[in-house]
Length: 223
Image (cartoon, rainbow, N blue to C red; front, top):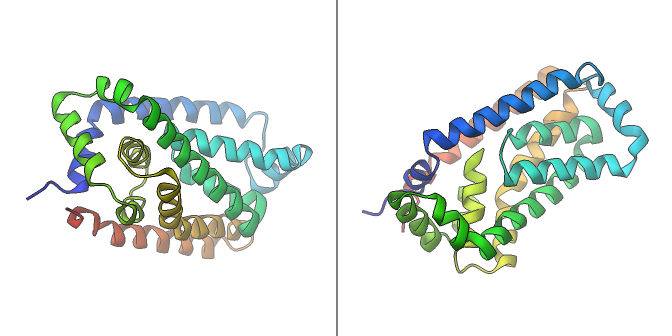
């Protein structure tokens, strides 16, 4: 039987890589703590901080989400919820969807042009086999399922799709299809946190339960 997608991703996301990403996340956390001395990290404080930038503030947030989708030093979920907090559910959803589409395409483009030359040189023999297996087996429909996996798995899937034979427009379309429900719930939870924190927590809990439930299908996704 072919190994599951979850097993393949576990092979690629080694403890060393997770530890490296965790170290980068700690650096970001320290930077956030320092930033608290200059920025009031509350919904109103963030709105006040971003207000002078106008739409540029939204574009700054889009840029940050794109960056962490390509190099996942912090969970993109934090910024996606923040989009709902600062911009509301509709504009926040639009900004996060734009960022997700561009971020997915950047990872795909990098892999399509430099994947074989760079990515594979950083992998062990077993990891190369797992990565090649993922590249060969990934399909547009499976993209929807694989987008249920959070964190570094998002970047790995983007790179694998770029090294596969999938055309870019089909990849982006099905990638966005997979993340739309999650983005809608995250930005809604962010918006509700400013007016009804308990309801926001409820939406967050429902989101986590849905993701955990749906992710159970990923181990069974084999060719």
